[in-house]
Image 1 (cartoon, rainbow, N blue to C red):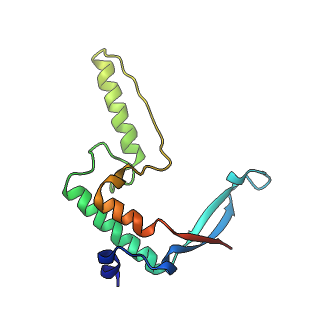
Image 2 (cartoon, rainbow, N blue to C red):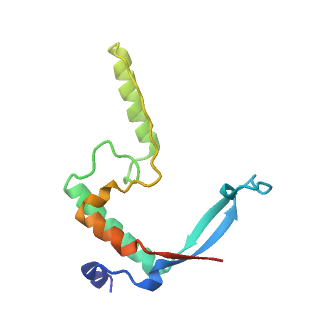
Length: 136
């Protein structure tokens, strides 16, 4: 079933539905802001399994072809924000020891879709891009 989905580039419609449960964040119970809610999406087990398969395929391809830059820390196995912070700290320390000017710029991207230029990422995105959510 999963191989067929991957070969045909299809994702079953029933897997594209999620039940959305909202949980109020601690300490925000009296707030009027929408940001006080933490959304939790309940997905079909088949969809989660397919997601794991796709993640494995994408990770295998990315690392076996050296597509991922060595400075990539987010969404990377065995790497965390602490590793990224330590790498930045080391670069700053080296620059300061060499009496160089050091400038540190930090950017946060909410939706980084630049990887879609690669065929395997484009296909994976097209399979799941029209999901539906029902709020319960």
